[in-house]
Image 1: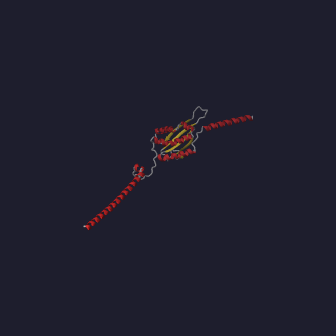
Image 2: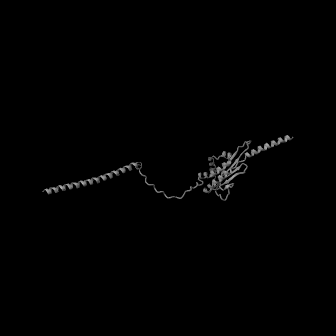
Image 3: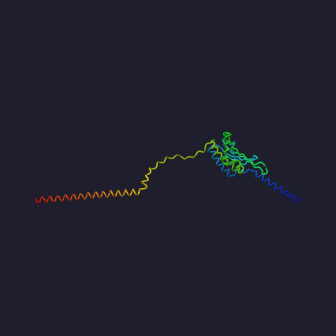
Length: 243
């Protein structure tokens, strides 16, 4: 009798463990705290530049909200918020089915927005997410990461489709125009400056020697002329005395 009870308890425990494991495998994991905080910071910058609130919402198959957030903070929805007259958000629903079920896992992704955005705008934004690899397979594999990644991709898609202008560039105050640089010298002078300086020095020395030679030549000529004058005067005087 006691053996039968023990077997029944063991079987019940095993069945409960299997059921609990299977139930946990059906739970959609939310994004991590780091992913949520980083997403909020990026969405806050985009909202300030584009004047559009951005957010996300991840829902489980049974209607339970797994994760939600926006540029206003984690857990704060943009839908109906007084600070967000214009808003866009990624809304994803993920459903995991038991292994024994013939129904496959399911994920649906949509972009929702305020009345300013038309149905075509929302449909085009949702289609653009797949270009970033945010398709059904990504949401089934990592739903938390995928929904936050899709949320930060919305501002880029909005600009791409011309719904909002890109973020303005921060420019500094204008500065005075720089003065034009001095005219560059010829390469011939720079490459042969040593030779030119030497040649100039030799020319100066040559001119100096020529000048000194001229001065000496004139001095000698003057001395020679003076000597000739004295000789002629002496000869004339002797001629007079003899007469």
